[in-house]
Image (cartoon, rainbow, N blue to C red; front, side, top):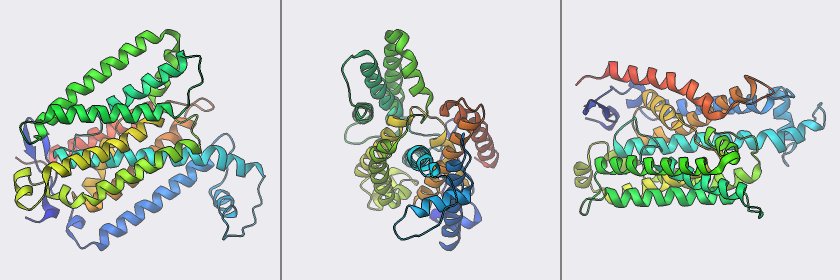
Length: 371
């Protein structure tokens, strides 16, 4: 059986369901590469549309001209108000960039967790990563809103990173059995630790009183205060995390068989698990620190990409990153325009859009399953 015929295990009533890989996933690399290029162009088009839409509409062609006019190698004449440059570069571009980074980060983290646990229902919330990152961020927000001292805005992402890493370290330690870390015990430990982090977050909420509105805004997700500082803070963690996951994409493919077979094929299972978990954790923490808790991106984007391109993580990770970026940019566009001039929380939009879509994907996978 070739790698293109292996699909991630879908836990349905404790059994493994298998879904046939699409025909183009087993062809040579030309078709998947072309598909990734087409999706990338679609994501660029979504970014241009999202950048132009707002209280002041800027046509996509004008957006392109304004962007090119600010590059040193291009000399483009722009017949547009001078305020367009400030609107694009100071307000909309940093928001769109941060949304795209967050979507890509959550999607690639979900892809890595699903491959590692051989379960397409896994996502950054499964082993408590998002809950731990959220707990750290909520604690920082509570400290900043209740303390009269001036506290740096980067306290929130720093606390998010610390919370996520502490959660993963605890989950990994609790999940170890002897000298190995079985997937089942890791998931169970993650659910328990994630529940504990959620309970602690709720306790903090109850103690905040009238200041709870600041934390609730974070929990529902959003980018109303996004700026270039947030983009600069998130980008290194997202890019480094993605690079690590992509470097380990081949060993991650071998883990799709099972851990014992992967060991026979020369994979250091313990090291691969540790690197993938740390990389996905840093990526998730960076996203959660500035976006809040946004669900379904880490579920829908990887699952949809897998149905289109197959389970090979060398192709799946880039496509999932592009899909996550495009999906979250569209969700952010809806959040800004549906009830304009007011803005919906981004987590509400992803739930409305993502839940029915994921149920459709799940139903399709179950209908295709035969076991």
